[in-house]
Amino acid sequence: MSSQIKLVVFTPKSHTDVVRKAMGDAGAGKIGNYSHCSYSVEGIGRYKPVEGAKPAIGGVGKFEEVEEERVECVCDKGKAKGVIEAVRKVHPYEEVAFDIYPLISEEEL
Image 1 (tube, rainbow, N blue to C red):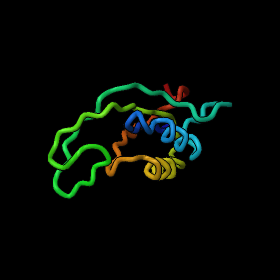
Image 2: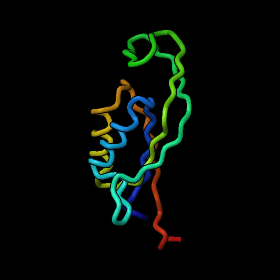
Image 3: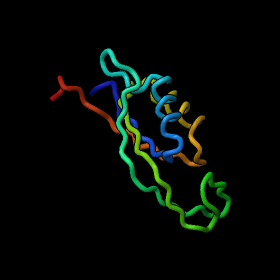
Image 4: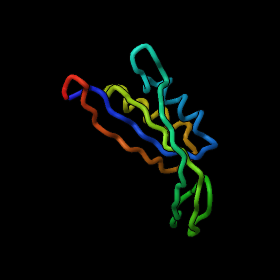
């Protein structure tokens, strides 16, 4: 199994550049002689903050829709926790949604 993962984070469009930079600065997105490689796609995030939440956007008990980007990049497993920590420092949301996918190398096909 490869020593890399694909890390995906969902962020409001207002913060995509700072999140993407934090990921790359922490070591994610390295492909060959390139750093800070990522891919983004736009979408709509939907949620309803419940009692006890402190939403960055919206209010408790109210449905919210936010223009977001899905930002994804490859990352060495050994750097993944540091990348996630770096994202949490700059991400505006109280609860940050991540997807983490194991990858196989081309040689393993």
